[in-house]
Length: 204
Image 1 (tube, helix red, strand yellow):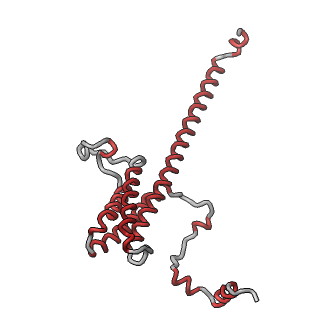
Image 2 (cartoon, rainbow, N blue to C red; image 1 turned 30 degrees about the horizontal axis):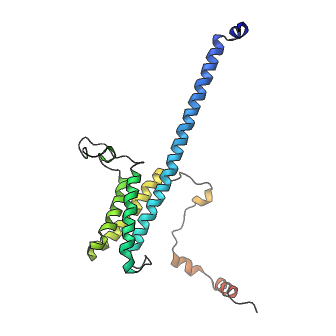
Image 3 (cartoon, rainbow, N blue to C red; image 1 turned 180 degrees about the horizontal axis):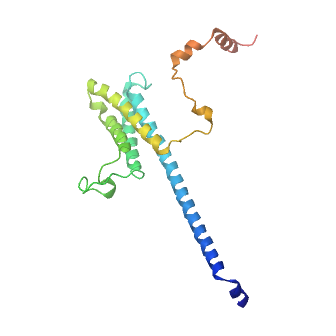
């Protein structure tokens, strides 16, 4: 013990203390990073589900796009209304309301104040799914456009939250030319069509 006491100088003590503080700080930083990373992954999964529900709603309402029989629409919209309502409530776990001294003061804590714009887009999609069946033709036309706006608004805001700031390879970030199907169809050559037809013929 005497030898240990002789070796344990104030400088050694300071060194050990500094090392311990650094280790604790490193652990806290890692835990915080891990928590942020887990939350980001959770938000990404949630956002993907929102996009699926909103885009499905929009495509079902666009004439000729939904690929469904008219009698199927009420049931599909009913299921989407439930899904969108659930997604709004799930989103409250990630995005808190903006506080306000009086607005919603009588509600439970998660519902006080004003909800974020990100959730507004989902709420409106839910309202469209609920109100479509009782709306007239003029209102339905407007609902189609509002449903499209809701998808675009949510995707734009969610991209800021969980989208990557850069890609893993520079070629995947090269600017596109805005081509559509008609342009690409015009570029298909006769030679390629002949090759496709030959592949479809039975062997002689």
